[in-house]
Length: 99
Image 1: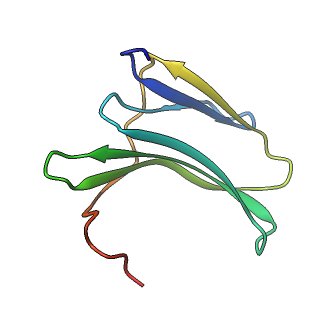
Image 2 (image 1 turned 30 degrees about the vertical axis):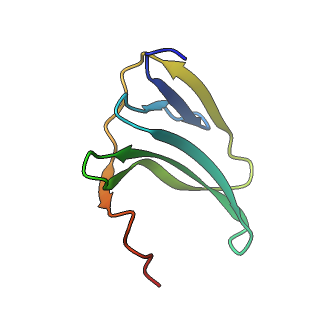
């Protein structure tokens, strides 16, 4: 695998594309999730940074609802200038999930 970090170039409909990713990340994901109760779908782009102390930092670039007919294009790219995430949240992976 290349030492150049992979990134995702995301375009929704005719909007300007955004490029998401970082060489620091262990995981970069894009999820398209159908939401039956809403009759639509959600698009999210996130990443996971594993810190030296064992904590995990979740990064998020995009989280948006989609409507019927929306077009999403995901292009895998490398070596591109990426946008900074819009949020970063540190999570202790040993802590039980909240209910």
